[in-house]
Image 1 (cartoon, rainbow, N blue to C red):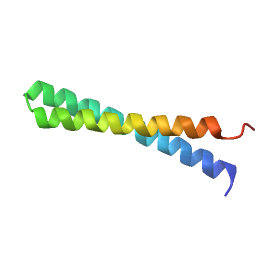
Image 2: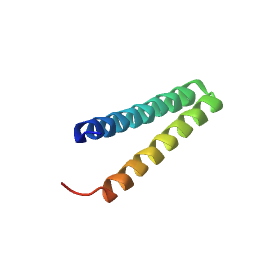
Image 3: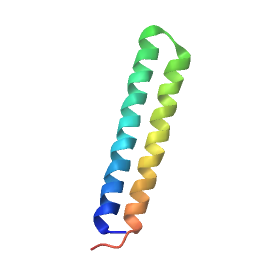
Image 4: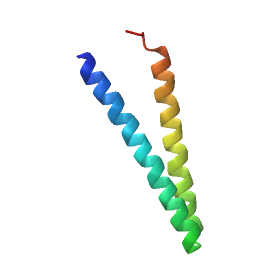
Length: 67
């Protein structure tokens, strides 16, 4: 696998995680505005999941050899 493929995949993962975090923020805000506790909770869960994935990516990056 070429280095560019790995870099591209890492960038896609980071972008996907950030999009999931933003989606969670929108859901939470919508739930708060409409008084829907279930939607608000789903938004928080999406944000938490995205943050955990982002943390995992950072850990992986820390253990990658520097080039």
